[in-house]
Image (cartoon, rainbow, N blue to C red; front, side):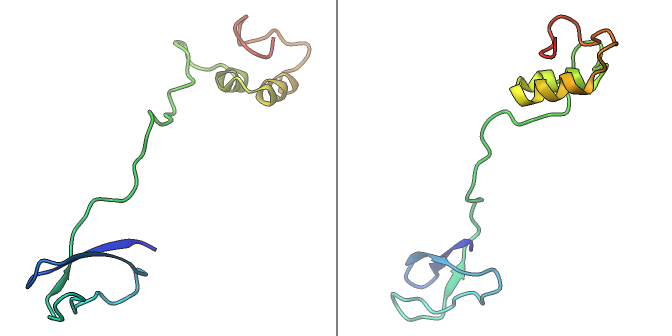
Length: 102
């Protein structure tokens, strides 16, 4: 449930109220009793931190040649094992020497 900020236009009393989105806005000020309580516009209550993930994060200069190159970017042991299992035994490793599935 979101927290809404309210401020009374008569006395200036400000409160924050936890309400459902479907609840009617409050109008009566708890401090002075006037029907001048108004909902305020506030910033979002969360922040996104970090650089995020982009589709180009795991591409090398020439572009990925197989799913092995993409999984090597994650450097997870399970990913490397799945990558090694997905490559055929007879094929030359398309990822190069820097790939985790070598």
